[in-house]
Each structure stands twice: as C-alpha cells, then as structure tokens.
Amino acid sequence: MDLAEVIGAALVAKAAGAGARTIAGRLGRPVDTVRGWLRRFARRAEHVRAYFTVLLVDAGVDPVPPAAALTVFADAVAAVAGAWEAARSRWPFVGEVSPWTLAAAVSHGRLLAPSWPR
Image 1 (cartoon, rainbow, N blue to C red):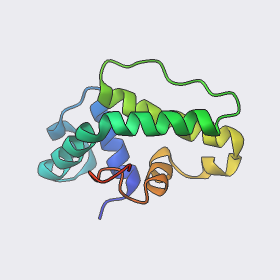
Image 2: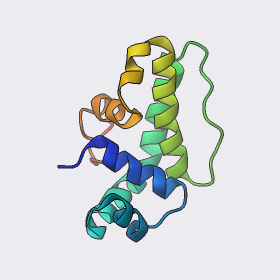
Image 3: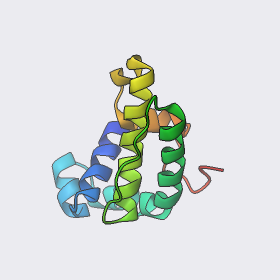
Image 4: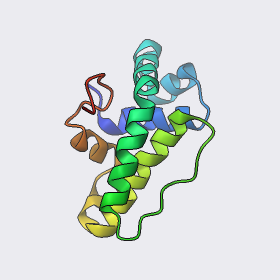
C-alpha cells in the first residue's frame, strides 16, 4: 500500500500538468497504478473540492478559499492544500503532517473511494 504522501505527490503533479507516465517515473511506481489513482481522483474531484472547501471555511481562522484553477482536478488538489493550511492556522500541530495525511485521516482512508464522501 502506498503512503498518502506518494499518492498526494502524484495528484499534485497531475494538477500541475504532468502525465501518468512522467509521474510514475518520478515516483518509481507502475504506470497503471498511477493512472488508477489519477482516474479515481478525477472521478471524485468535484466532491473532493466541495468537501475540502467546506472544511477549509469551517476550520480556518480567517479562511481564504483558493482561486479557481484551470481544471476541477487542480481545484480539488488546491482545496485539500487550503484545508490543511486552514487547519494548521487554527491547530499548529496539524502542520506536523502533510496535507495528504490530513486528507487520508479526514476521509478515513477513502479519498479515492467512490463511496466517499457520503
């Protein structure tokens, strides 16, 4: 099983415009594995964006939602990072974990699962 940080790095790279083969090479993971992560996240991107934007607003001391990106995928990645920043501003110890570890915890490890969020 891959760590949240590895999958998160793949999602960040895709949001920045990298392709699955490039990402797989950088991370030392099989292309099919990376492609699966990217496809699952893409299918869930609007739900992830909405969920983490609400979390950002609810957790932030003075929340500032991220500006719109070029894709819903990139918007969702930005919302995860924004929610982490907002939580870190209220609870500094959250900064001890990565945004993707926080996302895994908040989603109970189901960030890429079709059944989350419900």
